[in-house]
Amino acid sequence: MADFHQNGAVATLHNLRTRSPEDLERELVTITGRQKVTLILPSLYSELEGPALPAILDELNTVKFIHHVVIGLDRASKKEYKAARKFFSRLELPHSVLWNDGPRLQAIDARLAEAGLAPSEPGKGRNVWYCVGYTLSRAESDVIALHDCDILTYSKDMLARLVYPVAHPDFTYQFCKGYYPRTAEGKMNGRVSRLLVAPLLLALRKTLGENDYLDYLRSFRYPLAGEFAMRSSILPAMRIPSDWGLEIGTLSEVWRNLAPRSVCQVEISDAYDHKHQPLSEDDASKGLSRMSTDICKAIFRKLATDGTVFSKETFRALKASYYRIALDFVETYYNDARMNGLYVDRHREERAVELFAANMVEAGRTFLDNPMETPFIPAWSRVQAADPDLVRDLYEAVQEDDKEFG
Image 1 (cartoon, rainbow, N blue to C red):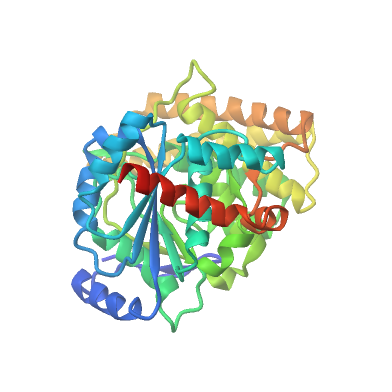
Image 2: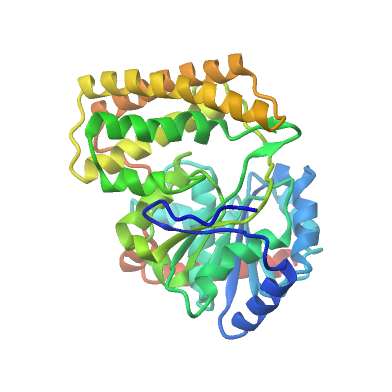
């Protein structure tokens, strides 16, 4: 049975296995009869051909508390968009497909670029941002939930537990983050969370001293989880990072906009597996190498906005502290894995730590060279102030695509 202890700045809602998933879903159906829940699915076209997404859609077809699904489709030609529409037609829930590479949404993007408000680079952050804009244009959601399309161990129970804390009228939470153990096929996964984020936060605390923001991040058991839910009322003010710091950046925005008592995390699964990114030691622009650099920059930027002063000496001390802590973590994870019958390759773990340490220094150098750089896409409230018609036009662009290809 899971523990039930609270030991962080945000509330932790556990899965104590004392209530059946069916009972939880029945209550959620009653709750969502009074308020509407939208699910956002950011998807690459290539994920339509993988094993995860078809199974996810089959599970969603048994869900009774979702009112609409917004699917953001990236990297799709016209032929592929038409194929995607056919693929998603198996989804029985009401849904919309945003063809992000289509001419109508590209025209919206060009219009935003003229105003200096367009996302700076392609990727998941941009996809999610447009899905959020479209959800706001529909003006009918009380709660939105988001999860990835590559979850190999997906079940509808994950979604129910993710939505419940922010949908329940007796709870005051406005943002909920999912968490879960990262084990699959006899291996301990989640290297970036285990070997970068956790030791980095400890090293920052040791280097910089006590810091409420660092304590807040350390409260999350799996801060890089891609599953979260929130009240729709906070969407217009949320800025979404366009790089691979999306999850950390989102938590930072929640910290900026909400009091910790309005934030919670919930255990949504006993086991979680998805598509694994390569370490990419030879190409810093890809894989976990790129991700680690973007995560470090996201944390450094946020600390700087709160008044932390960084220097070359700070980053040298931080690297030394991080490296020692991370190597100790490698030992601890190895022992934990052995005790639970899991496999950990200590050599590969230490190689990952070495790469992350080097990327941490590079992220610090980049930050010092260009402290004004920001990957955040403007909040939708700013877009609406700059171009009051754009949200409506985004809605109509999606509807026109639907009419032309439906």
